[in-house]
Amino acid sequence: MILLENLSKSYGGRPALKGISAQIEQGEFVFLTGPSGAGKSTLLRLLYRAELPDEGRVVVGGTEVATLRRSEIPLFRRRLGIVFQDFKLLRRRTVAENVTFVLALLNVPERDQRRRAYQVLRQMGLQHRLGAFPEELSGGEQQRVAIARALVLQPEVMLADEPTGNLDPERSHELMELFKTINYQGTTVVFGTHDRSLIEAHPARTLALERGRLARDGWGAAT
Ligand code: ADP
Image (cartoon, rainbow, N blue to C red):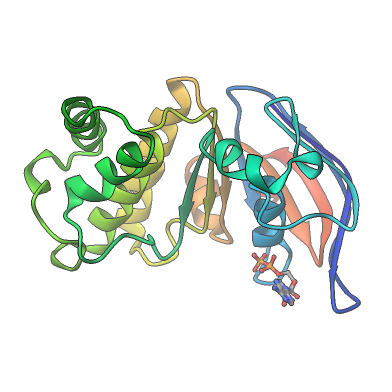
């Protein structure tokens, strides 16, 4: 599903990623970990084509990411569900509208928009908050709206960049359970986090970055 081949990326001559190679199969759950500044966000940005590598190849779902034309990028991104630390919700739109919005962009009929939004919001346990605005929700609820928004397009891959970064430990573990459920249902998940306790509690394949290098590709948190 994801192939990384000898990826390198520098910013202003300072390497952020150096010679990263890895392969992630369809249906896998993979943590991407490492201390702050290790290159996690950079690697995720290369996966959703927010950046191009200086060297190496990125292939996602059979698409050679570097060869995408600018006009092809939106269509490519629709195949991915992307979740960030800061939720990135539309503040002036309700919970339901934050999810139907992406469907409206794709000209999905209105009745189907509402049905599909309700379905994913119910899966996230938010069926009672459809009319609320983001600022009326807790951080954990806001992140679940962001996940619902990502899920509504039935992505092949979910990419998450520190999705628990603004949540307390209990909410973080609840969020992990949601991502695990999404993964059980067949979606490949790449979950970027520096939170070791999360990996200890939910062991999975872990790619660990250290100063831009892939320091480890193994199971669970290193001992
Ligand atoms: P992480 O997500 O693991 O905290 P990042 O991928 O954000 O790490 O950063 C890796 C390195 O690249 C850091 O040294 C960071 O300062 C640098 N970096 C990331 N993005 C940029 C950018 N847009 N411009 C300049 N330097 C950047």
